[in-house]
Amino acid sequence: MSKTIVSPAVASEHVARERTVERQVTGMATSDGDGVRLTRVLTQDLQRRLDPYLMLDSFASDDPGDYIGGFPDHPHRGFETVTYMIAGRMRHRDSAGHEGLLQNGGVQWMTAGSGLIHSELPEQEAGRMEGFQLWLNLPAADKMTAPWYRDIQEGDIPEVAPSEGVLVRVIAGASHGVAGAVQRPITEPLYLDIAFSEAGELAQSVPEGFNGFVFVYRGVVSVGSEQVQAGKMAILANDGDGVVLRAAGVARALLVAGKPLGESIAQYGPFVMNTQAELQQAFLDYQAGRFKDVEVRKA
Image 1 (tube, rainbow, N blue to C red):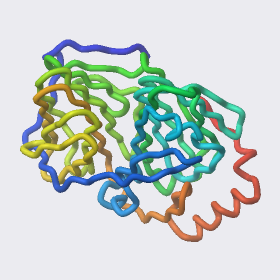
Image 2 (image 1 turned 180 degrees about the horizontal axis):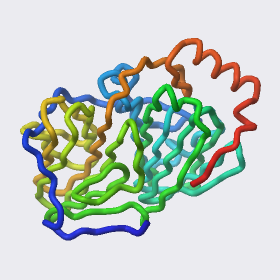
Image 3 (image 1 turned 90 degrees about the horizontal axis):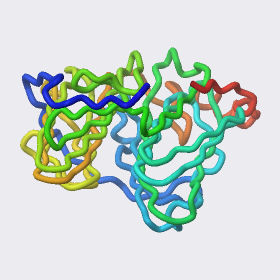
Image 4 (image 1 turned 180 degrees about the vertical axis):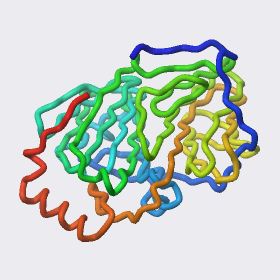
């Protein structure tokens, strides 16, 4: 797929009723992996409200001490991870021997499915490391699907310029007539990175019934009538068929939405299943070394 840039007014999104902001959330500073400092924006207590999403981590630092340890070998089962790099380089490897390099503007979309072991380690010793990791739940019927992943380089993520000073990177779903790099059935995720280079406005349809949020990571963005500062997540109320984002100057934000699964969630660390019995089995399988022998499909 080649990058797509669409001129203003080529395609439009219809929003009859703007969603409002239900509440704003401040992320929790924490560390993960081998001491990587990050901000956990979507925490476990919000999983029901933001179903099908399980977690959003934001990491950004110019200090190698905050990220150099990376994320050594660790397992996953039962969900998908979406790693989006804004700056820096991260080398990933998995238990089937695959490896790839995530760098500025690139995305790795990984389906952990029945289980795999992988690592994500910085490929730099200095400079800025910035990005996000989003966890997307899998429906019960797909929890034990074969693991899969795809590396999407910066130039393979479609972009659309719906109005002057606004650029949308369409990672998943669709925006203004442009299909994203990834499409998923059932949860139908929408994942957009929206950049304002000057004062501007973006209208984006979001199907009624979908849960969604906006995470601002540069400047200030107004969601409907409410201002959202950088570092804040605005949970969208389920009261409309779309959202309108406005900025008075340079700003960037993620817009994420999806169709809720409405299923039970049993999570402990890197395993997300539907029942405690399935969770216990995941631990037993991992301890027995069954994740190491799995075949991981690379797209």
